[in-house]
Length: 338
Ligand code: ASP
Image (cartoon, rainbow, N blue to C red; front, side):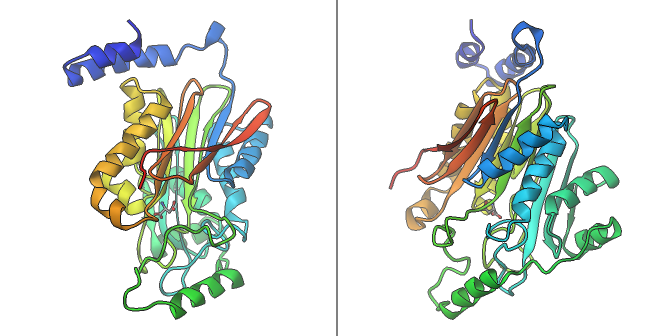
């Protein structure tokens, strides 16, 4: 019996999932002919193709998946034209740019920063939290002081373009406006959302990370899903990894990246696992989905054999997959039509 059939046929989900997960792990660790894995990289949105290239170069130069994740995300963080991540990211209601990021490796090590001001490379601060402290997450001023103490240099993250966008938002803010504003940032030169990057290296070691300036015009002090391990990103080194983008509050309610990876552990393919999480999000948010047309949430996933998947609530999400010889932008499957 195939592993998936075994799971489908198992009536007692608890016992079935436990046994299947043990079988799954054995199976997933087998590579054809006992060879090492071929690297595979998957990331969110169209800027993912750039991040993939940087991560691929890092792997080619001998870096492991963790370094490749950090390198790929750093490249997006320093690009001022990407107005949802790092330098140039859109500010909060008080015109402050604050960043959320996290990183996790195949050994279960993880680190995160929330509402971090004035530091471009939030993902590297998250990695420093992981490697140089006993904690998993630091936020706000404390995270900033920790970063300075570890040699990060302060930078004004607000670009003129982001300031102008803020002024426009403020000018048009009427009593009926949704305070958080439309989440769909199509009007901003096609720039979108969180960079989520998952890397499988040639030793079959998985790592993942996410970085974002969060929802534009967010309430000062708001922390999104990206630094919440299990929501923004999750890695189980024996099974797979997942990352998310979209309305963070929706993702936090279902701890979606963890759900994706646990579903893989129970036998789902990465594609099936992403769809399971999206179906859960739709179920939990059915009322708001009817009212708010810009409400979007998406997941990407990869397993230890390098199989990938992606799913979104609505049309429009894209993810980029880098393998030997190709770097493709894929239109994600979406599960909600209205
Ligand atoms: N998930 C991010 C947040 O809520 C934003 C996004 O990916 O669109 O902060």
